[in-house]
Length: 71
Image (cartoon, rainbow, N blue to C red; front, side, top):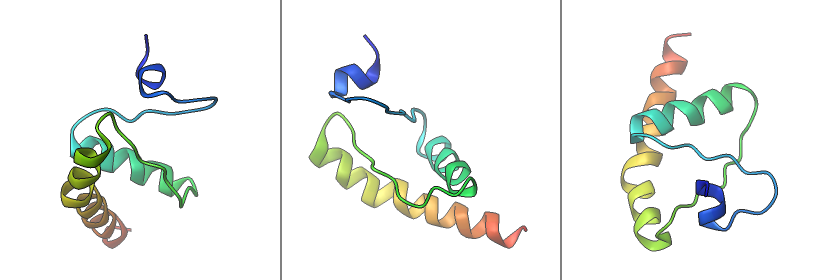
């Protein structure tokens, strides 16, 4: 069974799996393609939301600033 089925995803869904750094870079790749809104969820909603707020979102912002400065 794939991750989306386990998480209860319906229809079209994409899963980004990896370290926080890998997921942040993947989100920025989507942003570079014009995607500006992301729906992020995990298996454990409360703990995942806490982790995203502490690690993934700040890391994505930091990597985005670094990427923008290098252009």
